[in-house]
Length: 111
Length: 113
Image (cartoon, rainbow over all chains, first blue to last red; front, side, top):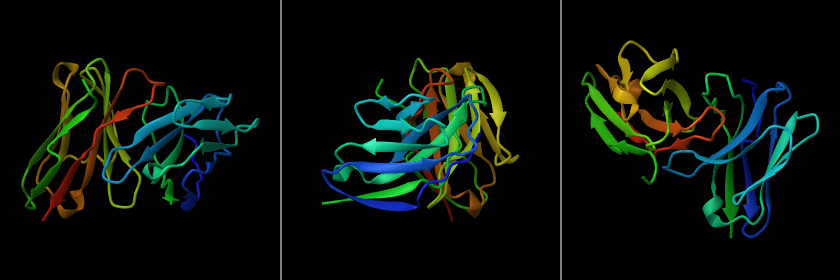
């Protein structure tokens, strides 16, 4: 699976959009981009995933660049409960199905 | 069925003792995964099952570790002769298919003293 690069940490203001970047310059054509988050003392929670097209669900939006070498997770209206570590992962569906987590981005939402 | 259940939530054991953790996945999920997470790090893959078959094991899974999933339902992870380096959060996850997002349990925190 391709490696990803994320900022170590970032702050954002409550009620504002949080934009979390991820670089995956070595991504292959059959690899998806997945985002998970982990709130303190809990297991990781699936947020969203995509291949080429932008995706949106009730939690977030995923914007993937045309060359697929980077992506941005957008939390449209951050709340204090969105404080967590966010992991960007790229994975091929057939790659043994395991997710390989990096260090993630520690996001602190401030009032 | 409200999600993936792990038991116990916390375990403190003396070095050299054996411990066993249990994971109950979402009932219709055929894939089950074990991960280990140490403080400040992302989860690390240990092993995964499709139904009752253990299909992949990480090099992190030493001979002291064994996982089973009899009948393709719940799974157990046993650590024999625990060492202080085994102290970590052990996470279980399940999924219905390869492309789906995983659902993780809340984990079992192991402390070896």
